[in-house]
Image 1 (cartoon, one colour):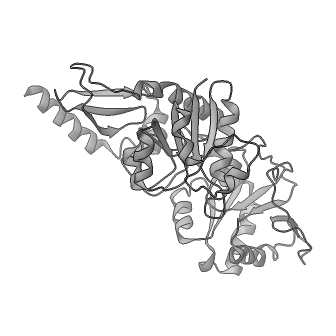
Image 2 (tube, helix red, strand yellow):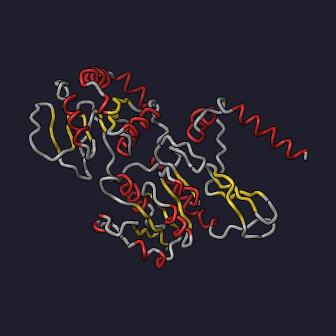
Length: 376
């Protein structure tokens, strides 16, 4: 059984999302591959997790890994270059310059980068939840999961304490909250054992897990960057804004209107149906299976190994032979051939940032350039 090394991390700057989804993938695909976790940081809390097999960064080469997956935010390019001498590399959810050196780059969650260094955009291969799926119950409390930012949580308490006809559960050290409608609950991996009628969180894995489970989700941002991300997906989430700029009284009115308006909630949830973890998992396995074709890429015409990547595509990479100048593709997913109306609007926009119609001028210009090359 092939070894796959997953480089990720856990802690205050990483949260729990990266390692949670990687553990989910490892658990679901364990009958096909042997997964070993690692971190660039030798002092990472990852090495304290007894539920995973791990090794130090310096030991990765000795594993002879079939593939290395890096899900650790931005890392220095030198590490990706070094890992590439060991095996193929897939990078997940980074906006750093190191993406240029990876074989495949996957965005599981949206960002505002819009880089050409990305193969797969959300939500084609988006892995969200661990084994416990969020559950919806319209009579249940509203969950607040706001991470480690105490100022954000304080502002949230100021808002929800004024909505007395709704009960709330805040993930915080378990003690008396001082409010009749707010209960504190310690963090644990099974926070979704209980159902909720809505969730208030920030832009991240939890938000997408909840909308995939058809739970109305409100975003309340700890930073301006998180708010920019929230605004970029305003068709999916009801957004309260960046907490430092939020007026408490106005936020109370907005939140009340959302929490007690089923029509508004339904509009957002209808837009979230493109998120499907099970289908994404199938695509992840296909990508992993096909990475073998990227081990020793040679020109299909002259056989030269002197090649360079020209661009990335949703299912392939385009390469150029430096010897005979042949252009050729290597596929890690089957070509997408669903040209339904959904493709030309939703799917096309997810991949390229605009609809097919909005991109028509560029497509026409590209077609004309191709015809000129054929003529010549």
